[in-house]
Image (spheres, helix red, strand yellow):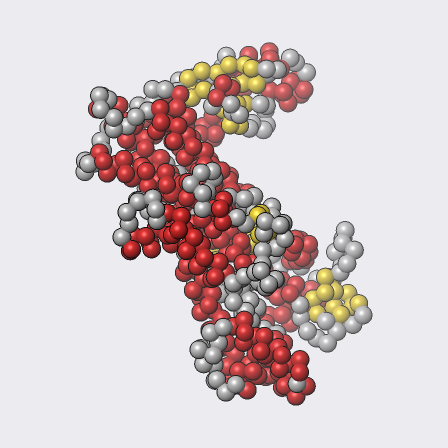
Length: 567
């Protein structure tokens, strides 16, 4: 339900009827219930343009506002704000209409786009660690969100599978005579460390590793087979993590450095034709206006850099995949790199000016001491270990709350544990660092996944107790609590659209927390199954509870978090 759009059109018509010209109309959520449901704050700007008293202008405008249907009343407040209250009858009708709607009243974009989202980006030389968590779940949430709203989303997982380290690893594979045995590669971390020791200690081994890099890049079949065994084992570890997280990335989404490698000479040729290349100390560089340092795209020895590969990727995604919007969900510290690469891609006509390029940056996961999250001995925490611990802790947190079978307990612990880790991350403004806290994320109170999942389970319990196959009847808004809950539910579409434009999952979690908090107040003040309540009122409250559960479930589904009927 695009309520703000409807109100914007009503205000536009009122201004037109009042013979007032306004180019930019913004309808805002009211900050307090006493200020109405929405506010039009543009009168102050109009007063400056028209050089008139703002309250007089506001009074003129409200005389022309059509309050038939959606609006109950409007009033002028303060220096010239226009407060708007919505009609209970209209809210009732709109809420009733979407009770059984799978999309909970959310429509599709009027003009859908093709969007490429680059996220996760695990290292092929090591197992996924906590540093990969944010990119993986933020990217997947944005992909889910845009797909739900009607965009065509192409997931892309850019992995580094080309370079000196792979010669070292393949040489070590051969030396161990494993022939790519997957059991030998089970602990990638240890395998990499062992190979690095050999590389540092043996000049003969190091030379062989360098030779293997050349062989890989020249297409040697034996080396490529060993290289592929290593990549397959690495991706197998990633897929295990993706499965636990409920992330939708597959091998078909992988676009590795090796995929773009044949295009790198063409990138250099394109930049040369556009007159963008400068030779500096033997390296080919692009100097950008307003930047002190150049972007090196080819080293003096002929080697390419990350910028070169990213330019090839941008051109492929813009021209071959025909994307309208290309998003890179990558650590905020890479901000300068992407600004420069985006600028070069546009200047070189590798990407059309109409294509929107976005670096969706994010902060770092920190420990309680405010330092990057690591093991006690200072090592990097494997992501799979973190997720396993989340499930163990979730089981300890919930097992005393009810009588569960072992199967129920295992399932609920998995849903709650994984959901807790994901929600704790997604509920933070992605640009901020955040403190990782088991106690906070597994709490039944506050803006946590468990709080949302518990509210959903409670509603399912209420619906089961009603013990009827189908609930039929209208939602009747009769008091302020019901009014605020129904209104918040109808804001779902506006919330998702804002989150999609800003690429901010925390917009959804903040909204969801407001919905659940309002439902808990409604549940306390408006008994649903208590004896003596008229059937019409009982049905209305059941329907409002059912609609709330639908919003919770759909929101969590977009965030990649499951629900259970019992906690």
